[in-house]
Length: 204
Image 1 (cartoon, rainbow, N blue to C red):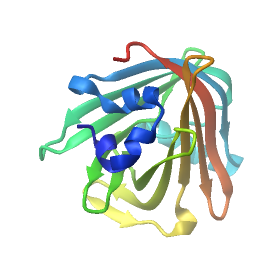
Image 2 (spheres, rainbow, N blue to C red):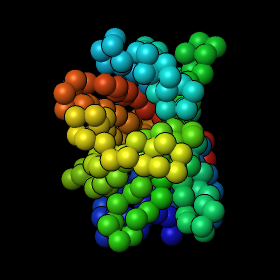
Image 3 (cartoon, rainbow, N blue to C red):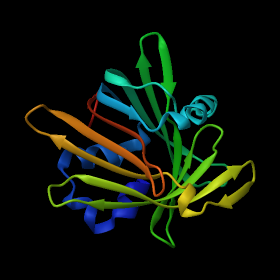
Image 4 (tube, rainbow, N blue to C red):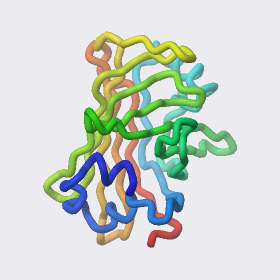
């Protein structure tokens, strides 16, 4: 049983059937998809140096644009301590340049949240809360965050956090998944966002 079924519990049955297939990972098979980001937007230019540094950790990037091709690969793996994990690999193609936004997720069953380590190697940790919307879509919201410095993790005050809201749904008319991500800071406002659609290669 995938970590997403566990964290959503009874809510999982309210997901659109295609989203249930997407997050079930039968036989621990990876989920592969390709799509187009209709828009990718960054925040204030003062953050661009930080975004450029983020490319080294496959976390953030300074490029923006419209109609950007991208791929998603979600791979179930087992961590060193036997913990079930899902590796997220998101690749965006700006011409010949590839940018990444990767993460490693696992379940905190005691708090019923998803633990999200962002970047490779990880530089930011975030608690994630999963809920199902009335239309069968999935909503993901980040909560407490920490700066990751090797084995040391430092809690981040809210003023320094990049709080994300992710909305994913399935469009039956198009036969594709739709995704919208918005990252904001309480002080600066908009930091990073993208919106697009994608289709699975094979989905049992």
